[in-house]
Image (cartoon, rainbow, N blue to C red; front, top):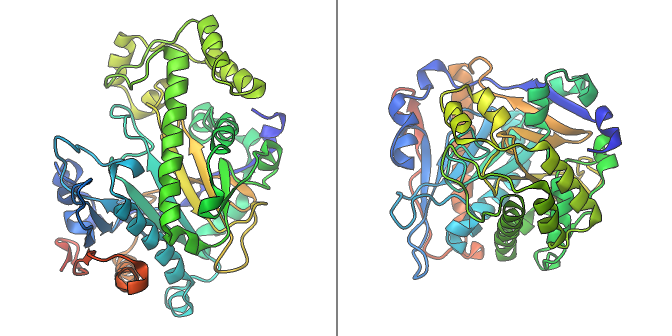
Length: 449
């Protein structure tokens, strides 16, 4: 960790967002349904049918009214095709067809255009707010709490209103935090080492082709509140998200993260595959880890950081791992690592200095954060200008039914806007079928079409 880490501004207690009205709380069958659509039955706003290709079976994307919102005005776009023996879960960018990824990121660009529309800003009091996009990937952690609780490829579309963000003015310093478990969950052991490793690995990619600039890591700037956490890539404008090159970039980033995670897993444990549920691979002897890391060409500073991490890690014997199955979530998250790769990806309207972008069309920052112990995803743990680490506390009371109906109006109007944009000839989505858009009739039946 950098020497200046104690003065880093954080807001881990301030951003409190209510949950849905009690009448719209999750039912047991929605919590434990066998398919995505069973779980989303009352919350499905619209289904998008992706054209089938010879290489990939048909994907389906659905706009979802989230059961545990991160803001009043948010929704989720998730892959919802039924699981099969060949594709039990389409959990990451490599598991879906390129057309599916393009439509997901086109929808992301459309969300930014929608919330920038002056009429929409007036209708929903969006002035002074903040858009955020978040994608999580943690396909192999199926025992303890995970960065990616929903094991489908999905994107969070979030707009925080100014009134929701006002409590962030009461930021604190990391040195003021007294709960070591909270610190480890909000500031993962890979928070600073991860970006340095990724920067070296990503520098090999042709990022300029996608209109992306890789920024050098600057831990001192992050600790001073001048730069977000994560490995940072700058995009010139939001329209980059709607291009085929951006979809290919996301695939390349995912592939690089998988390859890096595999190399490190093998260096630390000698294994290349994730362990069985409720098990973790045994660590190699420290000298063997050092030898393995020395062969990877990671550079002296990164190698030293990984060796320091190895000194802090301990084996998790099978009896202890089995006991964690019956332990509290807090104990599991304190004792068990995540299975790799585990990372979050966020997109925010900031420039290279971490300050809010003034223009509606850009620039924006893409932040990649790799995780070892933290089970908080990118929609729940993010950066704002001058605040590198902000935690969202969800389900803090309940929104009123009137608030939720206003939320539903926002979501429906976005679905209408997005459908028109996706089906425009210039979008290049021949064969895409945009299903009917529902209405939130009542909380008992939810959204219906």
